[in-house]
Structures are given as structure tokens and as C-alpha cells.
Length: 253
Ligand code: PAF
Image (cartoon, rainbow, N blue to C red):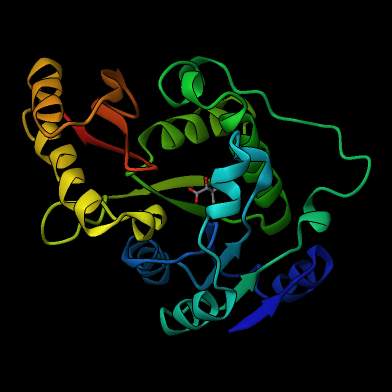
């Protein structure tokens, strides 16, 4: 695996590989088995697998959440290499957002409501960084986890609306054996919080917003939202803060 910190180095590395298919897995690091499932899907389908490792400040509306986001670049690089990633694009923030950067992708439509309502500016940051990554890497296929269902729907909308020449591949949510969806933020849950958080997959298993709300309330969780929406398919989605950790999860209905 080759790690490249600059756009120029990424483009140079990819130049000779454009005759084959290129798969991109965008990540913010803190890799877990959910990311590994994305790498595996890309490895099976593409000649070259590129992963990006970039903790995108533009998509954090909460400075404390960004500051507390787990970071371990050496561990992430080792996991990516083990998973068969060919190129790890790991730029500094100034490489993607140099002084004077002033052009943003503002998704509306499916980006409104749910995460869009609770995290103002979040999808603007996600859409902008993804369009930049698509432009830098020029993948044939980009891989996203179904766990962030609204993000999937937003990215698909952006790709469609801007006629971007790539395919979006959605990989099912990976869960721990007890049902909790894997998330980089799970490491911030205390053992008690983690036990409480199991009410989230249990609530989703009802496939019903009212029943889901009751399951969450019984566990002492006050959700931000429990809603059915078309997020790349009819979806029951939940967001809730457990302890001090905000979690999201969903089930396709
Ligand atoms: O899902 C994520 O980790 C991020 O939102 C993404 C797609 C890597 C963009 O920063």
C-alpha cells in the first residue's frame, strides 16, 4: 500500500492505473469492521482500491464532537493495508481546504430534515468533501455504508444532479453480535452507555415509529428523532444521544 499525502501525489500514483477500474472508499479514519466491509467490497470489484483518510472539519457542526473524534492514523493505515487497499490518500486539512477556499456544494432535497435539521451544515461539508474526493481520485465506483442512510441518499442525489461519472455502491450496516451498529463513536460509550444503546437496534426491529419510541423511552433514551423517510428506500431512522455520544442507526423497511 502506498500512502499519499497530496493531491498531486495521488494523481501521479493513479495515472498508470486508469486502464483498470478504480474503487474509492472515503473514510474519516477510526476504522472498524464496517469500513473493512467497504474495503472488501471494493477489493472484490475493482482493480485498484483507494481509501481516503480525512477527518473532514467542514462536516462537524459541533467543535467538541470533532475534538473528541478518535484518531489513530498508524492503526488505520495498518488496517487498510491488511484489507488490501492499494493507495491511502491521507491529506492534511490545508491540502483540501487551502486559504481562500470558498466553493461549497449545498445539497437540498433529501439533505433537509433528520440529520440535516439537527446538524446544520453537516451535509454541505459531506457533499463538498465527497465531490472533491471524486474529482481528485476519479473513481469508477465509490463505496458507502448503509449505516449513514441519509448520507447515502444525499451522495446519490449529488451524483445524479451534477452528472458525476461514477457509481455509488451501498454496503449493508455491520453490527456487533448484540446488534449495535458499528460506529467510530462507539469507543466513547461507557459499558453502561453501551448496554443502554442496545435499545436503538431493538427499537428499529419493531419497524414502527411509535413502538420504537416506546422501546427507547423504556430504556431512558430521549431520541432526537424517530422517523420514516425515503433514504435510498423506505427507512426507519433513529438519532439519540446516549451518555454524551450521539448515535444514529436505521433499518430498511
Ligand atoms: O461517512 C463518513 O465517514 C464521512 O461522512 C465521509 C463520507 C468519509 C465524508 O467525510
